[in-house]
Image 1 (cartoon, rainbow, N blue to C red):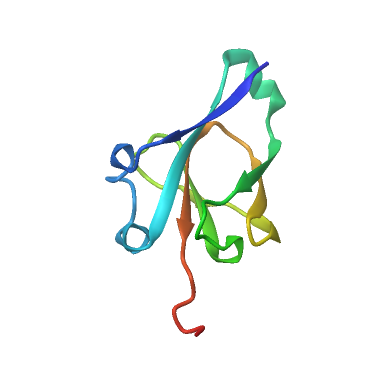
Image 2: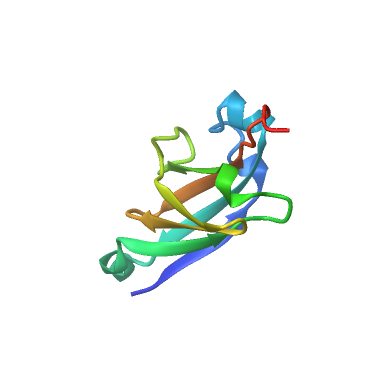
Length: 104
């Protein structure tokens, strides 16, 4: 069984992304499973956030079809650069950076 991940361009998901996220910064990536790879799920995955992001302010969203966001994923912050989530299904994930504006 094989699970794979790849980053995808914002353009491919722009119609999915709610305006609130589009305003903030985000990256998108695909998690795929080969037909027999679904056995590997759920899978704990560690995500390294992009330079300039702080993991504490990142939110992770899931879309199965790049048409609608169906869930915000639970994440656990390991440090300012890494968080952990559990992937239950293959699909497209959006990692949005939503810093709290009020904290100066």
